[in-house]
Image (cartoon, rainbow, N blue to C red; front, side, top):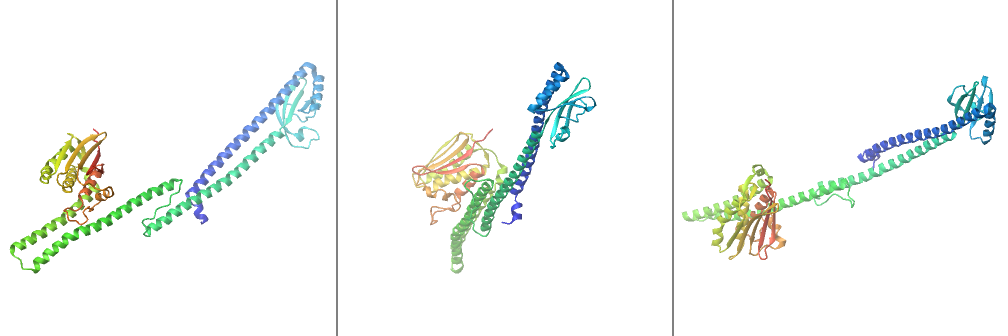
Length: 452
């Protein structure tokens, strides 16, 4: 894996960005902690010094100068604070603090300057109080521990920054490698698909992330494309198979008419048969074109509210005599004034194809039932018969173009009736389901009910 490729990944760039933001936040927090801690420690130190200075002033007010000098001498034994009592002409009267400025308030000096023979350069916080007769009282304490605390805080945050940088860089490299591995797997799979292995699919991890979810969607798309390609191949084979028979018969009749002496009536008969075969071929192509137009959705723009009850009723009335001629009985149960937003011509053809299939592909004495009603939020159309039915293994196949249970093609038809019905149903946002009628077949259509 090339380093520029690794460092150029989006995940590594995002890791660096977030690492930079985190380090900046870490520095701001560290500076805030340092300032607040040092300020708090200084304030505590000053409060203690100021309290001690006020106590000594009260001692001066009660015992005078000598009492104050004695008190300072006693307090210096404990060495809790440093003291300085300066008289006129900057003369040190008591204590060890020197070089105190004759100014009331806070003063800051180094330990070496404030205390005789001191070797350290620690910072001293000194509180000075003015006493009568040009006497100045100073109480101080070193801030060494405050400085040490500040250094400890800085060192801790510097160590933390180093750790954060190491972990952040390591995490960025790890995420980038994982990202590149996923991209590499997707790339290899894509190359295999481009090379012709259409059954190859993109790899998906057991714990999917965003890329895995995208790969899942792409796999679903590839499955859909594969199914469409198989359907196109199947349709091409079926077209060749279904059209070969009428074309062969037409060729035989034309050759027979060309090479044999026939009477005028026989010529007319041969031409009529050839025209009949031509009509069959044209009807097949017309049905295919109709399915393509329906699936393209171009007819959806012309949708308008239609009375579905009237459509089902008129188709039933039209086919009722056909069923009677074949000794079959149609029973209708149609709820009135069911409105469906759609194409009236296509809906009529859909109902006609379903009911015609029930009549054509069932034996005599078959009972056919057609029902239309509203169930909840759906409009349901049921076409059921008591015929031989369709085995469950073939129910999905009969919905495909040109598929016929009669593989010998001895019965009329081109196997596109149900395909047209399915296309019309899907165009109208509905579903078509084949069910067992025990005995026979039930075709259940469900459309979303019209919301008005």
